[in-house]
Each structure stands twice: as structure tokens, then as C-alpha cells.
Image 1 (spheres, rainbow, N blue to C red):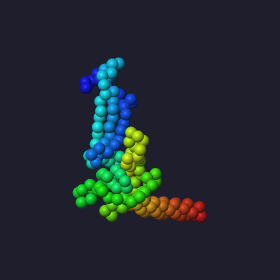
Image 2: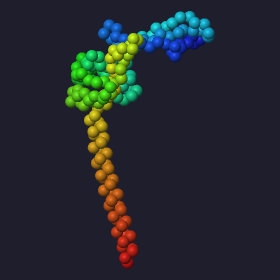
Image 3: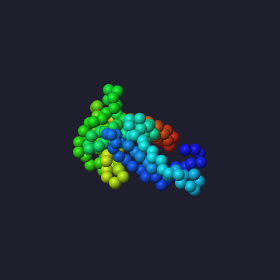
Image 4: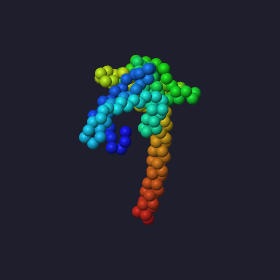
Length: 168
């Protein structure tokens, strides 16, 4: 394809399916030169660990693919290996779910991955480590009480000065 050829993605057909035990995204795009159509291009992208790591870097969250209640692929590492083939148990994917992996509590929200026949083939989960949130909450509570204590001392000091001037 050269610069004069275009791919009209708004007319493309997006497909998600499993191929050779891998999740694949496919797109079919029209190839045109000005107003003349020359054919179609089929683009195929495997949803592998590198693909998921790229998503993780963009959103700063853990990403998992769940198929049949088993983690099919993920961005979570345990002992320098990607966490896969772990059964997370039956779940209602329309709700959030906490999953404990390697002593980490992870909170996930799931989005269905739908194939060309509108059937759900898997779910993509976007999650975060709840221990980070718990730590931030505890730190915020401590900071709140410290600022409240400091503010109270300052107000009492101002009150003492005003009362001394008032009753002199």
C-alpha cells in the first residue's frame, strides 16, 4: 500500500475468535485509490502477552483474558512467569470480582469479548491491586488526622490571643 491508498476502518468488520488456541482480532478493510476500490485487506492481530502488556502500559492496570472461568492469558507475573490456566471459579461477569493471586488481592471488572456471531467467547478483565488502594486510604486517614490536629492547635492559639486582647 502506498500513500494514495487508504484503509476505511469505518467500513471494516471486526472479528474476535480463537484460532489454534489463541485469541485473534481480525479486521477486514476496503482498499481504495481515490474513488476506485481495489479489494480488501485482512488484518490479524494475536492477543498475546505482548499485546496485553501494551494495554497494561496504556491504562496502568492489570489485564486478564478469562475463557470458561480459567485465566487464558494475563499481565500478572508470578516467579517471573505469566499467570495462566488458573481457575477463578464460576462468576457473574456483569459484576466486579476480587481474585487472590500470589497473596495479592486484585479487583477486576470484566468486559465480554464477542465473536462475529455475537456470542461471548471470553472476557477481558481490567483490575488493580487492592492493597495499593488500602495503603492509600490508610495514608489519607493518617494525613487527615494530622492536618486536623495541626489546624485545631492553630485555632486554639488564635483564640487564646483574641481572648487575652479582649479581657485586658
